[in-house]
Length: 344
Image (cartoon, rainbow, N blue to C red; front, side, top):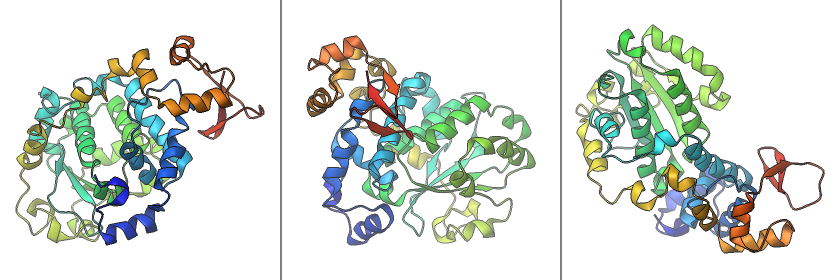
């Protein structure tokens, strides 16, 4: 990744400025503004606090430091609250590997005309006898983690196409409401990516009925970005040009090869979250590692602003400080989730 925009094309720099309010001269201060809020959430293990990691959250929230921190917190909180999703979170895990080999998801080699990466999911490829919907979700998250490392993906975002051709009513019975709700929560509220649109094509009536049931869990902005095209691929091409689409989606390119992206992800030995211990739940709940996740300058700041916080890191961990909602106390406070919280 280019350090604070170094190495970005002029066109991408202009887009980041225009659409994300990104100013190279203010990036360091914005990152510090997010990092300083970590002390307000001792209940969350922030396992990465480096500049390049925080930058993706700022870009996802157009450099609003409060909104970026909320997303940053939810990202790790979601991992703590859903340990089953992130255990053995690697491409070699059998369920994830099977989903990837079936093209769930796939990533097209070309971007759309906005520079966005294009995800494709051919739902009929799902062999629910070998792996569940949760494995598909995990493979989607793993793919996103791989791609979001790139500055271009952070700035341009993603677009998703789901082809429901030949997806049977029997298969739809395996669409777990619990996992679907997790998918919405994890992608809509807890991941630092810009999702430009989701396009459904060839969807049967029972998929449209399912979507109506899920609508209440979607934010208005998310609902507005979901497009139902049915069998009319011409309307899809109004959003994504045929020149970048495979033949089965009405495009001019050869049929998509499921193995292209799968082999790239499965074969990338350097891409291992387990080695870094970033996403392992057991590591998240370790009090020792929780203290290590906070930069030392934040403890100094906390001791200055909050008399209750000890200078000793171990004391902070042992006392397990809790959060108290308050809108009247005059102590140092942080704006979080539309309320004020202070450490007691």
